[in-house]
Amino acid sequence: EYDDKNVIKKLNTTYCEFPKEVLQAYESERTKRKMEEKEKDGKLEASNLVLRKIVFGTDGSVTIIGEEYYWVEHTHSNGKTTTTTYTYYYNDILVLKADKDGKTVWCCKIPKAQKGGSTGDLGFHHHSYKGDNYFFYLDNAKNANLSLSETPSQHIAGRGGFLMAVKIDVTGKMSKQSIFDIKEEDIRLHPWSFESVSENLIVDRLKEDRKTSKVFRLEIK
Image 1 (cartoon, helix red, strand yellow):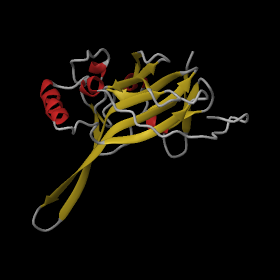
Image 2 (tube, one colour):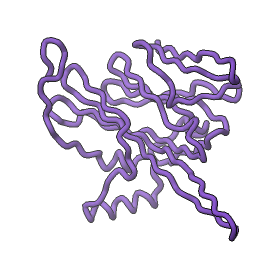
Image 3 (cartoon, rainbow, N blue to C red):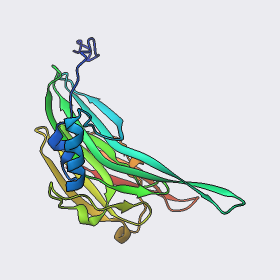
């Protein structure tokens, strides 16, 4: 609840579960079978889910945004020296909206598969506009029109990709649009560093070299 100065005066604690059908969306049949077994044992969950953002609505609702993230350590030895490297995985985004009473209004899964030895162009940026939620990230072009029974193709860090925009409207309806191929535009984008500077404007600073840079603008209309 909010007071007359729009400051939170009361918080209610509740628990919202991610629906099984949402967790199983865009997964392979093998993964779905494993999920069914976990559900029988009461162990079904969103694995490796990291909380990224919580958005509080003026009506008392809350939108919770999480991303499947993990890393794998690789150790190599030639008998004399040992080298350790890491592979980072930034996968599906889960978004859940609950009303002021803690009841789930809608829950969506944004299919995403990103991998890299560095994290430069991985991850995503979230932006709220007129009650809708927008997500921007780099993706493999093959993922533009996935069905619920398809798994996303992987985007590899540093190898180009398409800037994708996913919109989840106030009713929970999800739509996706490919904005452009960053190789054709000859730019390097890092969506995690995007900054929402106004209601409908997102910017990022693109470094061309050590001395010069330019501003990247995304305007929502």
